[in-house]
Length: 114
Image 1 (cartoon, helix red, strand yellow):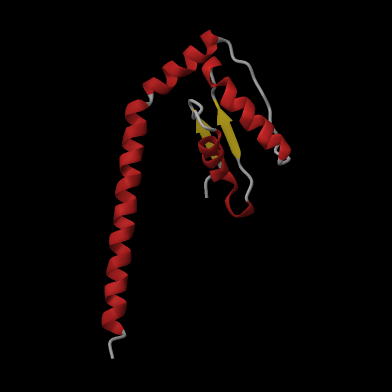
Image 2: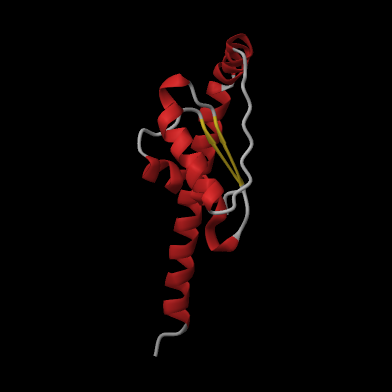
C-alpha cells in the first residue's frame, strides 16, 4: 500500500483531492498526506481540511516562506533525472512481474493438463 502522498499542487476539485490523499488509508490503514498549496489552492485545501476534521483526521498546517519553498523546489528539480530513472525502473519491474506471472500461468496449464 501507499504510506505517503505528496501533492505538489492541490487539485481544483475536492473529490479529486480526497481520492488522492485517500490512497494512504485503503483497507483501514493509516497514512500521511502532504499538500504544498499556494494562495490559489486555498479554497480546495480549506474544504479538504474541513472534511478531514469532520472525519476525525489529524490535520496540521505549516506556513513556509517563499524563499524556503524556492530552495526546496531547486532540490527537487535537481533530482528530476534520478526520479525519471526510478520511475522507468519501476515500470520495467512491473512489466517483468507481469511476464513472469504469465509464464507461471502457462506452466500451470501445462502441468495440470488433463
